[in-house]
Every structure is written in C-alpha cells, then in structure tokens.
Image (cartoon, rainbow, N blue to C red; front, side, top):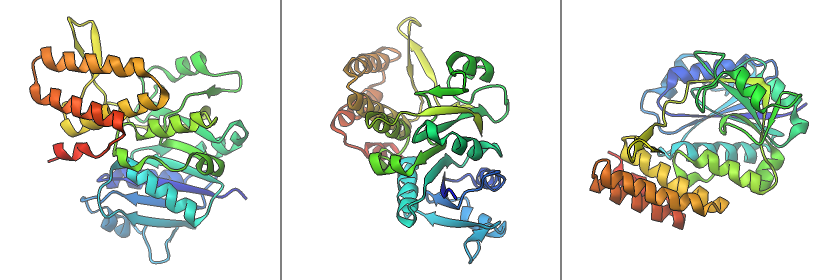
Length: 307
C-alpha cells in the first residue's frame, strides 16, 4: 500500500484550516498521516482544533494519524514547509508527500488522481481552480480552466513543465532524496519557486495532472503597478516587509537560474519606479538592500520592516 504524508502549513486561519482538514479526510485515497505545521498562530488554532475533536491524545482522527507541530516562532511559509517535510521524512520516510497551505481544499478525487499518474514524474501538481468559480483558474490571469487546458495539455490531459508549487503538490520520496528540503530562510514569496527551480535543475520538472483538482482562493496578492507613462508594469504591494521578501527572493532565484538579464531589468525598473512614480526614498533604500542581499543569498532583512 502506498504511504502518503500530508503536510499543511497554517497561520491564523483556523476556520479555513478545518475546511482543508475535512477535505483531506474526504479523499477517496486517504493519506497515512497528516502533519499540521502551525507558524505560531495567535487566533487560538490549537484550542479550536481540540474543541472540534480533531486533536486528541491518541493523535488519531477519523482513523488517520495526525501530528500537530507548533513552531517556536513564525518562520513564514518557507520554514513551515521545511519543518513539515523534514519531520515527515524523518518519521517515515513515506512514499509520497502531499503539500498544501491551509486555504486550499482538494477535491475528493485529487490525491487518487495524482497517485494514478505517479509514473509521470516525481513532482506532480493538481489543477488549481478558483474556490468560488470552479470554471476559472486560481492563479495567473484567472482564465477559464477549459481554455487553459486546451492551450497547454497533451492528449492525456497532462501539462508538462508547469505547477502551482505548495498548492496540493505531490512530491515523491525520490524528489526529497534528490532535492532536499525547501529553503527555510526565505520566509514567504519565492520559496515555492525556489524549490521548483531546484527540482528542475536536478532533472525533476513538474507536471499538472488536469484530472486532479485543488480549490484555492483566487490569487489577489500580486498587483502590477504601471509607470513610465503606463508602458511598464512591475509587481508591487504597498507593504514593506512583503515587498522586501518578494524582491530579495526573486533576485536570488533569478541568479540561481542564471537569468542575469532579468536581474538587470529589475534593478532599473524598480529604481525608476521609486525615483519617479513618485519619489520615495525609503522604498529606494528598501529595494536596493533587498536586491544586494538577494544577490548574496542573505535572508532575513524583511524583519527590519515588520511591525
């Protein structure tokens, strides 16, 4: 029998976490064990899970083993997935590791469909669909699922070389053996891309299994800010620590792939943006600090901007 460990990383979303857990227990192929990695939630997540009867002294819920691990500090999603995969691997190792955030809800057939395509590769992704509109994709420009599948899928309804990392992803033991664990220092925004890049570099590219569906809220985190007379756009969020993470991690990942053209583009585009649209000296300092640290592979600078 195939042994699967599910890893859910959560932070202050206890109601969504419950929905995610229930969706996992509703799977037609049920995992062997569930690991809940709590990034120091302050909303009473632990007490809520106890109240709902999910956390018990026996560490079993609905005939599936369950481990709740509260991290000593909030290390972001990167630390959560690092700790979860490492703990599960050390406890097992299991044949497969099914990884997701707390705001996702896998369709009852999701894990079964992923496993039925295990011969496709060591890194499989479900089709990540808008949880409110099941006809639209959750990420990208939110285009129709049918259009997306017709555009990219082969005759077997498999999309090679694409994935939505950490959203219902199925990693094999071989993937963990070869690639290792996620880069725990990246906090958020780019850690999932980094893990994807490292897998590709080891000859383990992803594939989307279109019959495996994972529901997720539509991506609203990234905003394109137009400037230079509306001719250019860059990703921008008006939150300094998040923007620091985005820029530092992006530069680090571009360097990892040897994409120096994009590194140069980002340097000029963001400096232009903060010099002229309008002049924001504090953001100029932030970006260039993140840029340099990204080139150096030096993480943790976002903490300076957290309040």
